[in-house]
Image 1 (cartoon, rainbow, N blue to C red):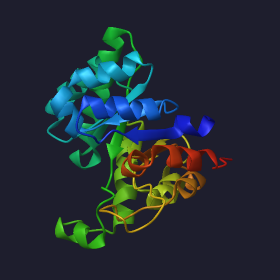
Image 2: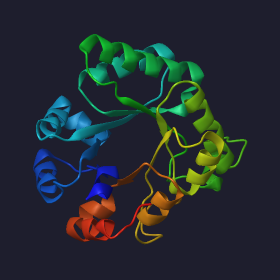
Image 3: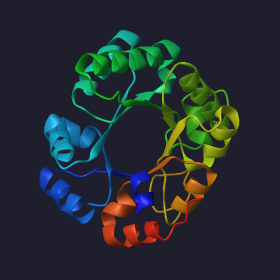
Length: 233
């Protein structure tokens, strides 16, 4: 069961009834990810529900704005008692520092544990062609490396990156930096995720956490069974 502490389930569903259904099927999971889809409909209600059930919440709103706006946004998110908050590393060092400062100040004021600030690097739905369309001057691997270093050097706790870039991040930064990786698939080519690997491969390469959405929501019991077979060294 230890492995399930390192699995984050993305609750990308439409309503509270579905949340409660999947929560019942996935009680062994400790961390649930709430993105814009649920948060815009239910706000703190969904977070309160999960926390009252003893679960940790990963608030995935990917803040990306001027430093002052992100500072105040992170302070407000910290008040909700979440365990992780995402920001976009493309916002630059001052924005990253502001996010960290907001989390530190608000958690200190409230006397609660500081939420982990996790920097999104390059979305797992993007490939080299997409990256050129938006003007990246470097390969995706190089961009992820640069953005991960930017996050690390400016106080973020970790990054969100595809499993295919885990080794690059570990080689550049070492072990004392969190990596949470989406793009976890048991079969390739099934949806819009382009840079994917299996759960066992992601853990072998050094992921601290894996984020699973559609695969586990479509077959909860089967995926849990498969995850429990994985041996982590």
